[in-house]
Amino acid sequence: MSTGASRSDARLKEKDLARRRSERTAIVGVAEHGNSAVLVTVAPDGELLDRRRIHLTDRGLPTHPHHHEGSWAVGRYLNIPGARALSLADAVALVQRVRSSAEHGARASLEALAVAVPMSIASIAIRACPQLPPTIEERIADNRAQTVADSVMYREALATAAGARGWSVHWYDRERVFREAAAVVGLEDIDALLYAMGRSVGPPWQSKHKLAAAAAIAAAGHAKRESTGG
Image (cartoon, rainbow, N blue to C red; front, side, top):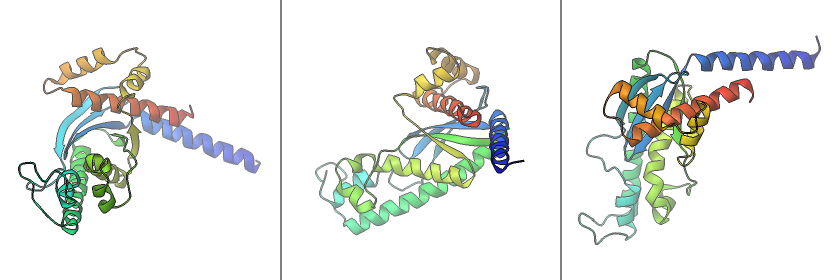
């Protein structure tokens, strides 16, 4: 057998393995809000396997250290109730504490989810992050970056924890994810399917749950296309 044929057979075997793996593994959709997130886990056929809300950071820590404490450190928003003066070094150290807590919380939360779901989890869908300056100091100083840096920090903590578990990370666009999910299941609109999904488990089933579910369904379609080379 030629080397080219051997490589072709190897690629086909890899695709077949990926396809079979995607057919029997679950997908998690994430809709984050501050330091908490809604996780909705679905099977490849769209069955809802788990729904939960997680909190990523320890009680007593600020939820938006870039936006609040960081801004105060550079002189923004000091006239609002509760604002206090602190140094930039102290603000950076606080962000680092919150980030460390979020990373620990993400690892513990995904571990608990993996234990509870009656199927192996292969991937997670997280809202795509905007590009930000590389350092905490730069993110605090940048007026646009400081408004989204905390949310990005929490999403990155979840992505890192998922990657450590061997889960693939699918970054979704909130503006397109409902259309993408509808396309996966062959519908023009996915609202009725999400409504039925919510009815099957009862309340709470809010906009965050629907977003997370749609993200999981869209990610399942993405994984299927990758496994088949489509």
